[in-house]
Structure formats: structure tokens, C-alpha cells
Image (cartoon, rainbow, N blue to C red; front, side, top):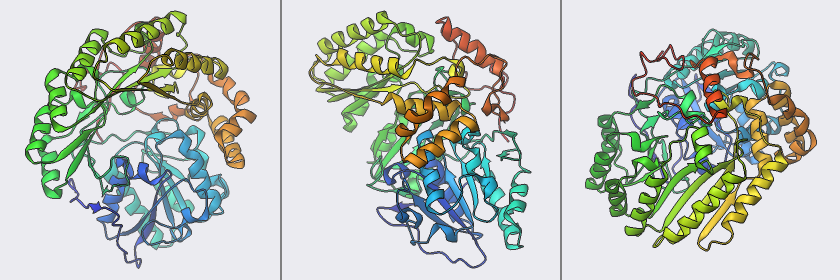
Length: 538
């Protein structure tokens, strides 16, 4: 089935009660708070696929599993232990502690090798094709890659064998026959790549979502720019875009009051302006998740302001031209100042700027350039009432050139954060929020570590009920082996064939060290294979 008809649950309306007889009961678990769950498309697409099939009964679970209440489903208040299959959506490294809490609260061992009986615990989502090495012991198996329908086909096989009395071990063996499944026994898998014929869109429209009351539509997946710190630009290759005709069909079928456009590179979508005009003609409100500065021309800014948009977000990332060049971030200061002038002219109220600290090339000259940047911004902001600056700390990701980068010590990173704050302090109307460097280092251990490092830290965090306490106890010892890995060292995540060659990433890493920019991807990557991508759709 190429197109699953839309099911939309509005407001607080939940999934109605389903018949359990003869159906495989699947708990779909998003290990984060409700507002984030309702704003995430990945697990909602899986849920929609399952709800349209008579072979399954499905219930939602979400939350941080801090108490026993989390073990009861959102819709029918069924206890988690009633479900023979648990499917976790894994999106953020820090949420792994919530996964561990779910297992612990349900009385299950964290190590799958010590769990002979049901439930069958499955993981899916972006973390599973980044680096599953640090958390693989939690799961009986992982689904590696995209492909919602392909995953549901696997569950159908499991369902048939389950009702014939197959043991959990036998069901895992069936799953391991798929090239897109990874387990403790099968340490080799190939990333599944969706053809993107059917765009992802919301199953739930709720005021409780981060994107309140919005039908979310995925416009594109992947990125053409190849910023060297960004996993999305690598793990979602090739770059894909939705069909504007299909998007309009979905909107006409559902009739939403507000649409949220989701994508890593919305301004690269050639249909963007025309689509926004069409939405306005339909009297449908809209919001946009991310915009590249080089796509913010006068026409688009005027169109957004006409629609009522009062806030624009720009990712600056590096604190200086040198850093931005090293990380392959295409950011023209000339263009930035043009955008600022237009924002002031059109009476935009808020400008949000995102930065990343922690690249080991940062020196005093780079912070001096950053200070000059804010001095000029303060002079030229004119009618912009508020500038919100968010500073995160670098987490090198697998499958990016910076997977080999040596990180600053946490103490040095804290000094850099304080230096950034000091630069901002004199300016009225410029606010700053920063990330705790320790949490970024926890994410790094989970992102780059193997089972010894990542799983050890996770177990300690569960015992302490805190990532920060766990890092202070054992983090220093665990992270030492993550730095300065030679090129030929086997990396924990290379049990996955993601389609991108190590040689390509290493060349890009050397360009980072030498502060050299690189080229963009092309829209039709078939025939290029510059990065080694030699398979596209399954």
C-alpha cells in the first residue's frame, strides 16, 4: 500500500479501544514528554501504519518513566506488561535513560541477554543508524534506517509466528533474517532508505504539541550542504523532497486550520513560496521549522510578514568566519546584514540566533570577531525588539567528518561558554541561553562510545537517576579512548552499512583541520557517488 489514508486525532481525542482477540498487541513508546512526542513524526508514521491493519492492537506510551504511572498506556490505561511487543522510538541520546527507566520500572533487566521471556523489545529511529553500539544491549533487536512499511511487514511476520507459539528467541531469529536488523547476535546491518513517495505527516494535532494545533508535513529529508558537524546531512543521504501535489492532497483530505512545514532545508524547496501562497489562499495558517539564511530573500521575508510571522531564526553555528569555513557552514555576513536590515524594515519583533561552541580550532581571535559581530548587530537591529541567542556545545556525531575530532576538556568548554556570556552581557535586548557542557559530554560518550563506554554510563545514570552525577563519577575515565582514533581504527557504528565511505569522511575531516571549505551535494546523487553512496532505494 503506497498511500495510507489519513487518520487525524484532534485535540485530546485518543485512540479508541481496539479488539485484542487474535491481534498482536504492540506498545509504541516515545521516551520523552508529551509535547515532544506530539511534535515528532517518526513514531506517528509507524503508529498510523499499525492502526490501519487488523493484525495489530496498538497503544501509546510516552514520558520519562519516573514513576509507575508511565507504565499505563495513554489511551486505554493498559499496563505495559500486557504487551508482548514494545517498540521504542529513539531520537535523542539523553532519552536512553528514559528507556532504561521504562525497563527498570517494569521489573526487567537492562541486558537483553538476561531476558529470556517476553516482551520482545525493539528499537527504531535515528539513533539506531547513528551508533547503536552504546545501547544495543537494551534491545532484542534494532530496526536500522527508515522505511515504515518495511518495518510493519517485519512485524507481520513476527505476528504470524507469535500466534503459532514461537518463543521470543525464535522471533528474534526471524527478525535477524532482514538485512536491516541489528542485534547482539547479528552485528551487521544495512541502512534502509525510504523512497519518500509518501511524505510523513501528523497523526495527532494537539494544542499540547511543541507545534501547537498544527498538522506537520515533512517537506524534505536530508541536506545538500554537508556541514561537517551535522549528522542529518549524512545519515539521510540522498536528499529527497516531497511532491507538492501529494502535499496538497493531504491538506485537502484533512482540512487543517494550521500547517507546520518540517524539513532540514525548507528554503531549498523550489515550491516553497508558491506553496505558502496557496496555503494563504486556502486561509490556512502555517509555520516553518527551519530556514537557511541564504534563502531569506526580500520576497520570502515580505510574504512571511504578511502572513503574521514575527520571529525569524537563523543558525550562525560557528563563532567566526574561520570556524564556519572549517565546518563547511555557508554563511555570508554580507547577506546576514541585508537580512537584518529587511527584518527591521518589516518590523519583525524577534531574531533568534543559534551558535555551537566546542570546535577545537576556536582561539581568542575568533571570540574577538564574535564580539565585533554583536557590537554591529546591536547598532543595526533598529526595530527588532529582542535577539535571542542560543548556544549549544558540540557533540561530534558518527558518520560525520568530526567523528575523529579531539574535544576540549569540559573545563575549557565551560570557560568558552562563560566567555560567550561575557560578550553578550553589555547589550540590552540580547538574551542568551546556554547548554550545560557536561550534558554535551554525556551525549558524546553515548554518540561515539561502544558498549563498554555508553552502556556503562547508562547503567550508572540509572543508579544515580542523573546523567550529570554519573558523568562526574565515571565519565572522565570512559571518554579517554574516544579521542584521536587513527583513521584505520574500526569504529563501533561501522557494523552498519550506511552507504558513505570512511575515505570520504576522512578527507572531509582533513579539510576541517586545514580550514578548507568543501562542495555541496547535488539533487540527483545517482551517478555522483563522491561520498561512496552506491545504493539508494530498497
